[in-house]
Image (cartoon, rainbow, N blue to C red; front, side):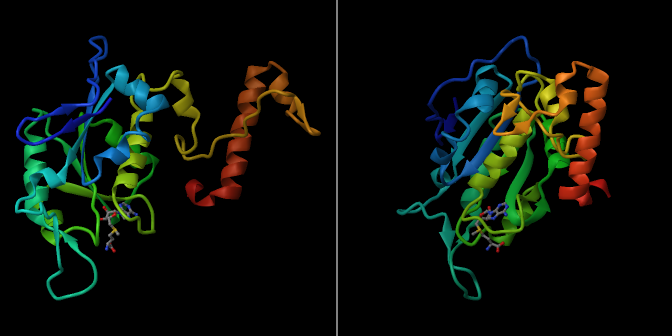
Length: 251
Ligand SMILES: C[S@@+](CC[C@H](N)C(=O)[O-])C[C@H]1O[C@@H](n2cnc3c(N)ncnc32)[C@H](O)[C@@H]1O
């Protein structure tokens, strides 16, 4: 499923991705991380797994530590000026970045995961889904030496106003949200169109069988077979729900 890039051309293929010749939109996603193994299960199932197998997206994971030098392959160091924790040092990150950039002729749109970045949302996911190549850099410890932010041509993105232990989960959230939007990734192309946020509204209420569950009944309109009435009801419900749960979206 994923390619683990290892330096000195010792690329360890976990499973090679077949490239679907019928699909000319293939996105390449690179992740620079100290924990590539973390990605295998979350990205190895369901929609993302199928998108990889169908050649809609290729995901390559590269371990920043493979670019560290010295007897202990250190990637972090103490902060100048003192203070708690360790900081990710520029040399291995820059070397890893430059190596990974050179692996494909497509220039990547680079994203640094940081709680200090701009908040990730559906609009950003749509924007990223239009790129050919994305490259994520996941931080650890107390975060990045400032020169990593300054020196790389990167956008800083946060997945919310809280602090995670590392950028891996944040990268996975963004990768999942982006892949769902790629043409061919979902079984039914229309399902993303009706999803919450796609038209600044939350999704309308959904029901499946049984018609009556513990006295809670499916609304009559959904059983009517009248598609125009169903569409009207759904729109009204979506607006009502958004007003109640997320009025900020209507602004
Ligand atoms: C413990 S955090 C460092 C936080 C840093 N000391 C600060 O206050 O901004 C370690 C790494 O986790 C990732 N991370 C933590 N929270 C995140 C968030 N909300 N969004 C995206 N990445 C996050 C970043 O890559 C960060 O470098």
